[in-house]
Image (spheres, rainbow, N blue to C red):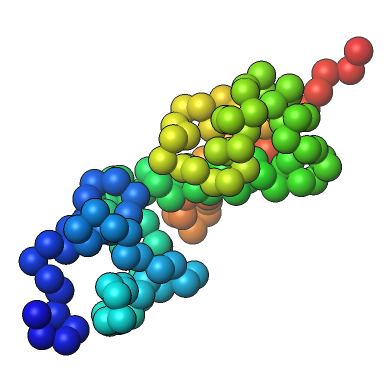
Length: 148
């Protein structure tokens, strides 16, 4: 192998990582990815979306991005409410193992459907709309509570 050349065993599986002979070789730095193998460092690649680096399928990248955005929104709600993991589990009626996956951002095991469901349980609604400039804008809005 010539220095800087990818070995034949370099793969980009459909999962959430890039591997070489079964070992993960991606290092994430905000919107950049540096490929490493042993002491050889490959070229730094720039991406607008880190999920574009781990899949060639734009639909899969969009799905991962949406899940990541929803997880970040949920975590922000938990922090705003000052909730610990036990509060989160009780409010969402989920086991602590799932709470841990949620707050650690394990998007591979969290479906969009479940994440939207968690928002609904917490009293929020995801509301996409088209603005006056023909841009799609998405808001997470707290539903108005009815007076007792």
